Length: 186
Image (cartoon, rainbow, N blue to C red; front, side):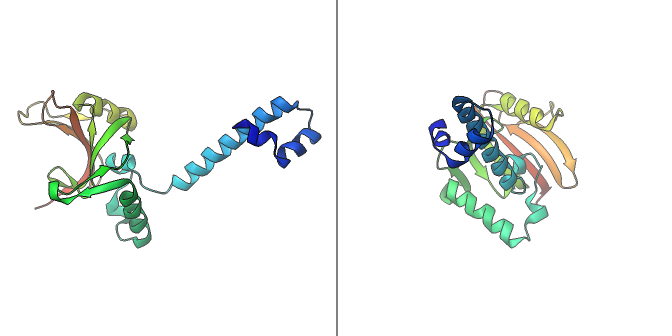
């Protein structure tokens, strides 16, 4: 990778104008390029919703659903990276391995969060791993319902019509649902 920078006109000019040795200048140019590349990627993605930001209520499609350009771009990104499985329940499956909060994505539910209207992602790794990953991302503990015999559920309200949740069938389940629900559909 650094060979590209060593044969570069910018680097040649940098060498002439500074007291840097060629090897040091090559490393310097490589590090500088990597930082600029990362800064550009972050700046490009800063205003765009991601699976993680939607599943943790940092973004809400309720806030931007009427913005046609933003909605169309997000839908195009989903189509590019996921396959729709209508015949199996209406969810998306990744075309290539991906992760949310460090956990492998199994399915994406772009319009539902369990029985509620929202956005959710089914991840592999089990309930405890999902709960810990969400709590780490939020910097706050989730409130868990220990009384339910049916499912394991934890949640945290992040604002009006924004509640983050983690749920799984039971402690032995190998996957969990992470999401943000906006309201229950009646």
